[in-house]
Length: 96
Image (cartoon, rainbow, N blue to C red; front, side, top):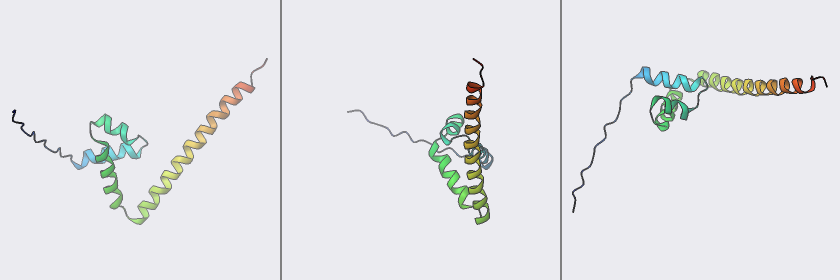
């Protein structure tokens, strides 16, 4: 019988600057999976950092974040509608 040895993995420690930069990338519109892949870290750790960051916010900051997120969603919607209208204008504006 072979004796199996356990390989102990060491936990990586990240400094605050790295965490803040990763969270800034997420808040600027990049997805958590994309940021995690590009930095070579787990998605779960990014979600954990984001949750910890939100716990530290005051009620006013939390309200501002919610408003900012709502405005970003609204901006994406309006940009999509604009692009559709541009395409429609190009199609219907053609002379036959």
